[in-house]
Each structure stands twice: as structure tokens, then as C-alpha cells.
Image (cartoon, rainbow, N blue to C red; front, side, top):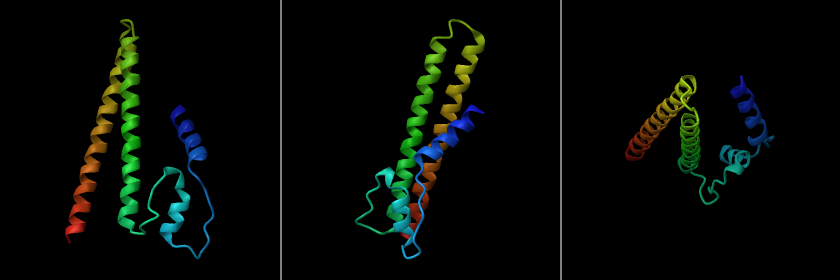
Length: 121
């Protein structure tokens, strides 16, 4: 439940919400809507570049989440003081983080493969 509340709070605070005018292109709307990501697509309106930069930011964010979870799990394990339930909880966090980063890396590789196949076509 705590995760759901955190996710809702994060979404409400950090995802900008705006109203779009009908005369703007889709890419212009997206640039305005996620300007807080500091995407530098002003020189190109190419959707491939835009989507690539979004994915780059997303994968970078997920890598930071992995790093934080690994540190958190390691600290929990070190401070468990022999308590088996705390050690098991720390192990579960570390294993979940490792599985998560494996999924992220696999999705990154699939994305690179798809983009490479699209470019060559």
C-alpha cells in the first residue's frame, strides 16, 4: 500500500499536466509536456530521436532505482544483526533488484535490436 501511495504522489508532483492547443504537432505537445526531462530535441522533430531520448532517460532512471535498491538491501543485511527475518527481507530486495535490472537490460537490448532493424530497412 505504501508503494501505491508513493507512486501516486510521485505522479501528481513530477509529471506535468497541460492542456494542448489543437494546432500543435504531436511532437511539440510532447516536448511541452515532458520538458522537465531536459530533452534536447529542439534541433530535430524526428520522432526516432525524440523516442530514443525518452528511452535513454527512462533506462537511466531505472538504473538509479536499481542502485538505490541494492544499497538499501545491503544496508538492511548489514544491520540485521543476525535476525533471520531481516536477512531474508534484505535478500529478497537484492534478488528483486537484480531481476529488475536484468529485465531492464533485456528490454534495452530488444529496443536497440528493433531500432537497428528499422534503420536498416
